[in-house]
Image 1 (cartoon, rainbow, N blue to C red):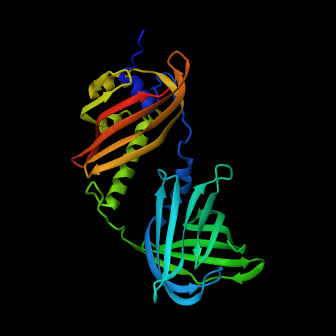
Image 2: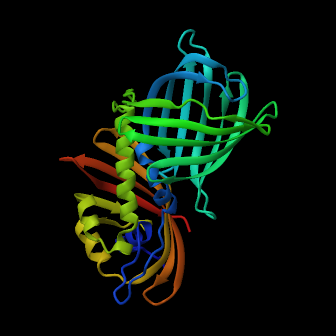
Image 3: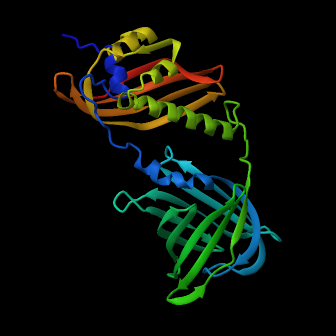
Length: 331
């Protein structure tokens, strides 16, 4: 006997929780890293400024004027933040220092972890740290080691006196056991993102914004049955919505919504995996990824399944909606 899945099975399996008629399943927070890192939002952006070379670290000279740029951005669906900096001497354009660092959530301690590497002058180094965001201040206790085995420990802070400025301060430097002290503060001003055109004709900044919007809508789709927000499906499914199931059945919006409301069961875990949004124009996006879930059906039988999906999003009258989609059952 062939086992065909109707749209309710796939939509419920692919994006969310099977509706519970007699009991409510309370899902755990699926994005603890996002919650922990949300305090970093004010620091996201492009920054630039001039400052005096502050020395202190192996490989860095002191005194000359440096022109600096820094980009702070979300990565991995806003579960981590990446800092990238590139600072050069104003008079001759030679490198002062450059590097990159990533902030993530430690799942055990619930603290923020900092891992970084770069060059101070011609000296290569790597670093690590532990910190937190408190009252708008980003604070890290950092330890760095150079290729020459120089060890430096210090406290690094970032503050936002206003929306257009960020202030960086490195204090209490101790190098190979010797106290160095505090370094000059660095003041950077927010600058616009570079709007480079992409193959889609959409600027890089606009493509990033569209990607974030589609990702959010897809994540909300995955939580529909936890939140009982079936109206979300009505909003994001276009009137000409059409979905192809693993069994080959094709269904429209009306049939899909009717089947969604007619099911019961519980989902104990659900996750959106490896989702990517491919921007092909200001009004066209194709999203694809995997969906994993486990739970019990209406008869109390446990299940675990994985799906791979592709959705076509079109923006009409300023609103993103899915017009076509397809799902395949992986296991």
